[in-house]
Image 1 (cartoon, rainbow, N blue to C red):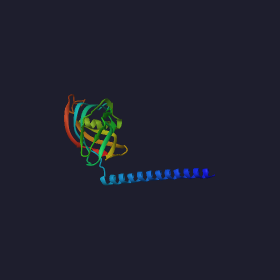
Image 2: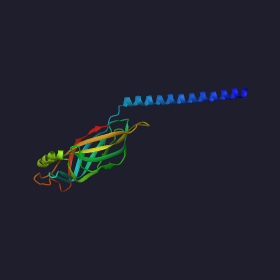
Image 3: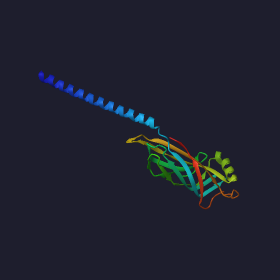
Length: 211
């Protein structure tokens, strides 16, 4: 009988130790989480800032009928981290060009990079698309652009970022960047309305950013 009582007390002792250990673990995790949230609230992370510096046009051909665009350009985009104590992981970034909301080039991947506080990175990806038909509802705008000798395209960068504060790294967030670029078509009397040689345009256009 005494053996059973002793065995019962031993199991009860281990159970109490396990409960105390788990309770301590949960309390420690809660305290760490609260500290991280407080630091996060004090630092107030700001989204990165982007500037479309220039675009080198190798081909930009517009045909009003049947509403077709061919694009081949190299863009230069500057990215700046405005935070002094928060780093940014760019895990995945894709660049492409759009015309009035319609994608007109393929996705171009930008290599992953870590951006420290106040750091600046410059990317120069190529974006291209050959004989891409424009949606009928954009046809009128395309005709107007051709007549005016100026086509407005939007450079888009979509990706996924994470924030780093000290040794803490957040989960992933979607990043959307939009940069408007007005590109001359050259001689508007030319039915192709295109640039046949590489021409570099200085833009220095600020981009809208959402995270």
